[in-house]
Length: 337
Image (cartoon, rainbow, N blue to C red; front, side):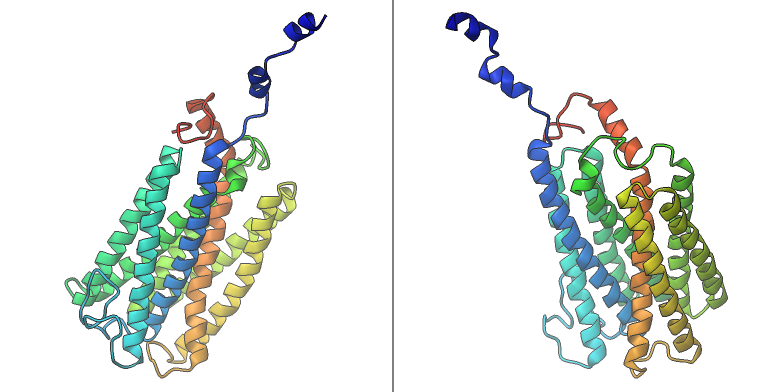
């Protein structure tokens, strides 16, 4: 009879409950956050290049006033020599990054279900505000300019790392799948070596900032460059040999090797220009300015690559920790916190 058949069939609502779980609304929020993080990341790379150009051309003192706005001499379109416009372009780029970071932090605070990722957005916003204040202190000569400039440069790299992390954590690749998918859970040795390489790269960028702003420490920087070359080569080779099954780790390892070769070439060129006397002069050849500035930017990209690789090796543990905190919660606005 039709009655018995009806009794044996699950109601429509129950059948719907049997569908596989999805990321739901959190996925859509994550896509938006990821896109905004990528835009902020691209703008930060432009800002790093602009800051490097300011240092290479000694344009930091070209504009004596400072505002919490992209103004120079109190106007958006200042008159003056090339150094004025280089510094003014740096201020415009910094303001754009600040606005994007504010939007990113607000988006994460409103839509991101993971509390620790929301906190990263807050830290990024605090970092960009601190950078703006340090820039003002540097211009107004409130503290020794060289020391402030070095701290300013180092904080820029730390902020860049934060944005890289946010872009990775909000990506679909990070959020999709289970905690054991992709990266092997026994990659402890790789994880430790990647962490050490990332720290070494950051310290090398600090040494580079000291050298650029004081003219001292060239031998230390060269020694650090050799150490970085060896460490990144070993890291990339190890990933390619031992973890080829993880397509994302493999891609990161191959990218690191490629970027390292570019950085070595730029390093040799920068060394030739610096030791030849071509430093801190707007009149130096355009090739010198491009090479030295590109050396700084590609160094930051190398740091971003090692950081992303390090974080990816931590992915199984981080996702497992999220599941342990809230094993039944869907990844929506009310999910894992």
